[in-house]
Amino acid sequence: MIKKLQNQLKYFDYGLFIPFILLALIGVVMVYSASSINLSYVTGNTMKYFIRQLIYALLGTGLVLTMAHSRPKHWWSLYVLVGGWFILMGLLVVAKFFTDAVNGANGWINLKVISIQPSEICKLYLVLLLAKVFTIYTEKGGHILRRKWAIKDLNFLERLNLFVPEMVISFSVLAMLGMIGSAPDFGGLGINFMIVLVMFLAYANYNYRFNVTLIIGGVTFAGIVAYFMQFTTFLNNSRIGYIIRRFTAVFDPFKYENSSGKQLVNSFYAVSNGGLFGRGIGESIQKRGYLPEPYTDFILSIISEELGVIGVTVVLCLLAWMILRIFLIGIRAKSTYAMYFCYGIGTFFAVETFFNVGGAIGLMPLTGVTLPFISYGGSSMIVLAIALGMVMNISARQKRGTEIEIFGK
Image (cartoon, rainbow, N blue to C red; front, top):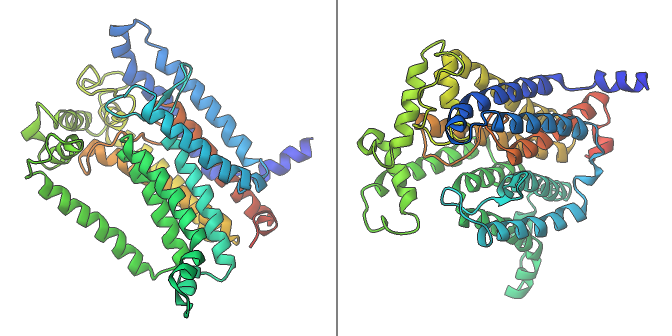
């Protein structure tokens, strides 16, 4: 028993586990600091979110350790991939049509003990699905779409029949993205879309210059469209009117300080108040009714105000280390499946971090995305912990030299 434990510890990836523990601990402390003052006004129970986040952190630690030592053969099981799609689509439908809206979005299913956010689970599911699909395609020689398209002397129905598998996969992915967007959950939609895009580009194996140009060009185009949308008025009363107002607030938050720019302006104040060393834990001003739910979307602003630039730098460096290490494990992978999986999870963590940080400092509209392992939330912590544990599993197999044996070439 002792030898088995020593063997497991020998191949354990401390380079991922230690940053996770530090981030989880920081998250527990900062969730308590950011939530206690407002809870004291409302319920008098200042420990409510602290206790819950501590439970989520302990549960997340258990899930990381469990997944790091699990048998990966179930990850790409047909039952998991097909059954998972139907279950998640069902949850998305329930969240959309049979729940009360939270902050204007029907994205949560309240189970009293915990609220499930299906779009969070979709992030991990899409990585599992696409890693398997692109692995199969790569094993068949890669660029299978080009090869099918190059086949000549086929009529329309024959060519259509040739692409049935691709149409089924595309429908499955687009239907899931569509349901997430209809919530509306544009933060979740953006993250899931980027996971799909990056994993597809990794499979397509285009020149890296093309990939970089495509991503930068897409972001630039979206920014230009968003900039000019602020000058339109015909969509103000439409379903997407509030989205336009969020973009408008990014471009000139102080002009709309009493309306759509209020949250961002108060986030700026929090960041400015902190200075280099911060005001001290518990001393934030902006958490006292100025920033809505400061323990979720704006927790980085509270960290900046209470722990200063140094505190924010520590958090971002830990996250950057974790993300870069995940990508490095994918680069080193000898297994195609392991490579795609790590690229997908790395993208998941990176884009979620960017969306949260970008929203807090005005680089992009507020999307309601959590800061990984820091923000309050059970669904987020559970999914992130499972994903991290799976990457650590791949890392351990690499060190043991059993990666190909377990995941295939």
